[in-house]
Amino acid sequence: MIPTVITAVVGPFEENCYLLGFDDPERSALIVDPGAESQRLSQELDSRSWKPKAILNTHGHLDHIGAVAELQDQYRIPFYLQKDEQPVLEHYPDTCRMFGLNPGKLPVVDQWLDGDDLIRFSFCEIRVLSTPGHTPGGCIYCVNHMGFTGDTIFAGSVGRTDLPGGNTTTLNSSLARIIRDLPEDTVLYPGHGPQTTLKEEKRQNPFLRPLVLQ
Image (cartoon, rainbow, N blue to C red; front, top):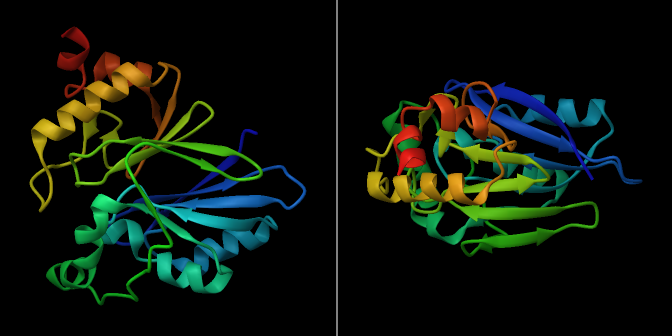
């Protein structure tokens, strides 16, 4: 089942939260990387009569998880995150203070993911592709020919690796894996900036081009 995707740019870091709505009898929905503005996100969902079933996070940085706890409480839905992101998640309050922000409630992970996983819902299957480098437990959620990439890859760029837990060599390995494992026509929905395609990034992204030529 191919979802309808709504992009909500939220918070001071202009992070992309994605709302995926499915045309099943329950009008099920998934929330990917709700970084801030939980009330606005719930209004977007409710205006479409979408019923969220889970929150999926590509990684645990503050600009991606700020609205998780409030949405968990409101909709009583589980929160999914890679287990290697636990240290990043636990430092959320400290990281907020570092940026002069008031930390919200620290979300509780209901389902720790372990590398490559397959998440099965009644209305769809989500392939999880482990892509560490920007953070220790970064991942991509693949639905049909869509990839929700978080901060692993952007249109024309990739995620920074100079934050705690980042590693350039590891990120390059993840990028090579994306090139190898995902179809060229995969539409990439990054954590910041416009959507793109893997084909376009292989052609023009300066961080991917050397890997394509190897």
